[in-house]
Length: 75
Image (cartoon, rainbow, N blue to C red; front, side, top):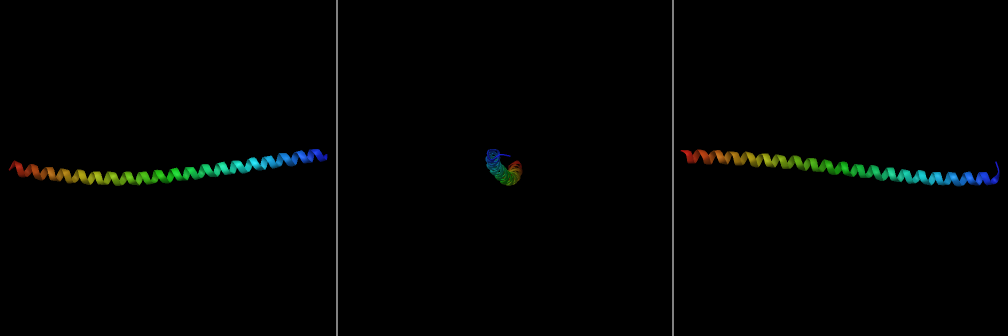
């Protein structure tokens, strides 16, 4: 191999390494974004569960109050 060929291979290898580092950084950012989205979805699901529980309790209280009022006015 001539010196020019070796120099050309060194340049190509340096470019390949730079591209590889860029790809690693892109994958790392993508995984971090995926983890952030998964955490936010988990928090939203937890909030939804709380809201449904509160709505159920309010519905139960309203139903019981309606039955009490209905029985009191019907007698």
